[in-house]
Image 1 (spheres, rainbow, N blue to C red):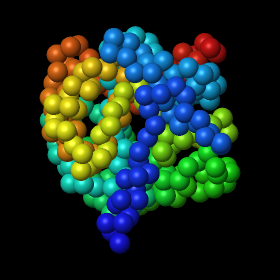
Image 2 (image 1 turned 120 degrees about the vertical axis):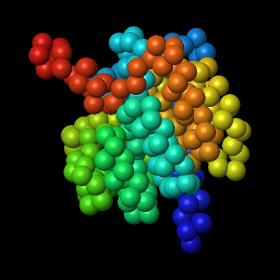
Image 3 (image 1 turned 180 degrees about the horizontal axis):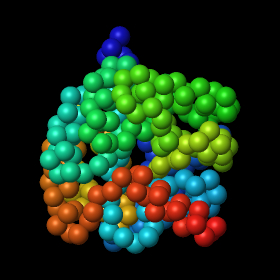
Length: 263
């Protein structure tokens, strides 16, 4: 049964990227146009929607900042090591967790919070929000938030990563009304297939090829490649002059001028 659940969650974790755009009958699968020029990736028609509902996929100020984010659907034994690297390097991160993860790994969720990281909302059951109504989405988000509050000192969650990368204008609108900020990503690669890992150099090279100022990086914690490459990735990016910030820094930097100057 556990094996079946892990497989189900893994299938759900597959995200849509490296395309513009991906459209279903009810919504869009997050996508962007990759480049190796170290520039912001093009997201086409998504740009206006994200701006309208204060959602983020990048820090567009041009500053050499990096925002590390991890999606945690289930545990494969690598998160402890990832947390060790982040602690050693003094780098903040955001972990987007599901209900299955909180139920099965409460101690890891608690450790994330205790060590200064942010726990984000990846929904409780990992459904496709684009085929749900507002009340159903609200229940998914609030149930996950309550679960995190039970096992850690983080009592509220403000950042949301939509399950499967699926969204539409209604899901963006409703989530904002419920007090959540959508966080997509501008750098990712195929890292979630646990039986098709390619070695730490693959994760390292994929990151270095795509990195750009203001990148929000998506990594899956089930990847042994990511776990082995993370220390090298952080060290090299620091050498290149990048600074690692939290999503709180990004939102504060963006929203404060709007609040002060009414922009």
